Length: 337
Image (cartoon, rainbow, N blue to C red; front, side, top):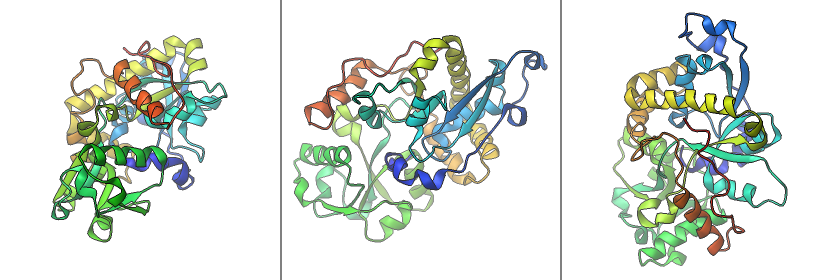
């Protein structure tokens, strides 16, 4: 859930181990075994990264039998080397998880890549720059003279430049340190002053480590940076041919996320039961923080606002970071409950 998702294609080779959770082993039958008499439809969901609290609703839907109630046999897997989006595009998975910023090349490709966003998992961009309070980086201008761990990606660095200069700072004075950070706590204690993270995971980890930090959220500096991250993507050819199944999947998923909103502690327990290698303390504290973010200020889980969707892509094209993406292109709310 931290910005490591941007690097999934670089590191996904270490994530090739598949976590499969079939309904027979994980789901509870809420219909007195009536669902056993119905034909089940196999669905594959490929994650963007290792399981974390971004994904809790899916695991709740598995555990509580919501998918099974809809006649779905859902398998959750981790991404292959070329990422979730290409697996969805190829038809090897019907649904996947990706981020709006990483979908821009898909939507501007000369090839017709059949991928569309059908829901957002979190209503607002919860990522930003974290640093130790003792370093005094309480606004973007404070990055001047500090070591920022960069992935050397054009969109990433353009966003950092934007927020620094919007705060009256000089981006050329930021020390860009090429480094992929896997342990934020250790990095902040050593030679890295600032890291791009998603607070609900890496930020919570720093809290548990007892670090006193500043967090600068991108959306609070530049409104165009309040893009959707992460989103559920689907194979657009498949959903056009199977609209009822797509709606059933999102209905069950919605129930899972609304359960997590109303019962964060229990939802955290379910996630840890399904994925026992996770740190239970981190999961529980992360779930408590994130449960309020799934729907935030909207009534309809998963809803994508076109004005926000378009604003980010316009910013990309205006800054020569992407070809132009037509207004409203690349997403739909039509399959949401």
